[in-house]
Image 1 (cartoon, rainbow, N blue to C red):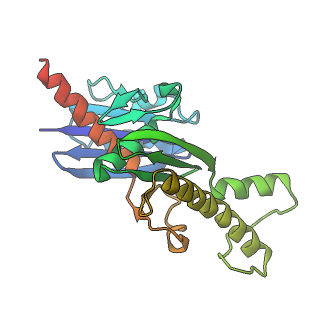
Image 2: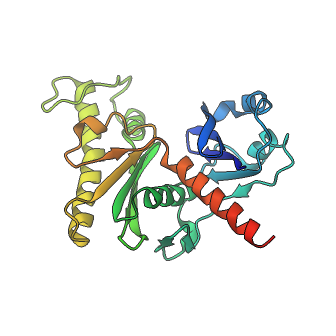
Image 3: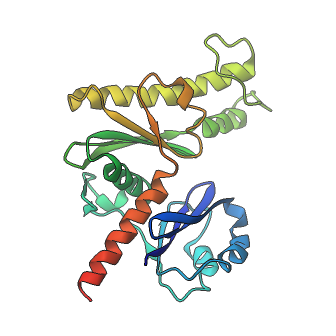
Length: 252
């Protein structure tokens, strides 16, 4: 029986899930500043057999996370990107420089599709990564999300107290103008990379997976075919955890 506690410690939110057999027994998401309250939640869960963590933020320390999982006598596995894992080859010049969240998402996308695809995660930052038909990570880009860019505008210009506007072709209010501009930035980046990779791989029907808390507002406006998957990072962490557990059993 596989009982896996999965943790995706991101820039703004701490996401977790308890995976048992082939399904999620429980899932949750909480602001980073409030993670201490998870101790009460975790006390009600069964003891996991494996704990895997993707940690990509300075807003929470490793010791903070270790404290809330200390009720179980399990040493967590802190994911770092490697050269090869779960059929995916990492093309980064320095493989461990690739964020563990991006690595997990790439592995989840490959496990889902087993063909060339674009992998987009929309959180505090937006990552746009490409996989080849051979499962090779070709590279990717990182840019601010619309929310992060809005914060920057408010802190560095006279555009104060902005409200979230509506996406308009020809905005006629400042709120709509800012929101539409930010959406064009993110959508345009994704669609441009899609076009470049599609041409490079000679794949006109290239699959594009999108995930993350900020993807829902983008999906209605894409001019490319996209498939939304709820939290690719956590799905990838489960795949990696099962692979590690299987390998360990082989050598016991």
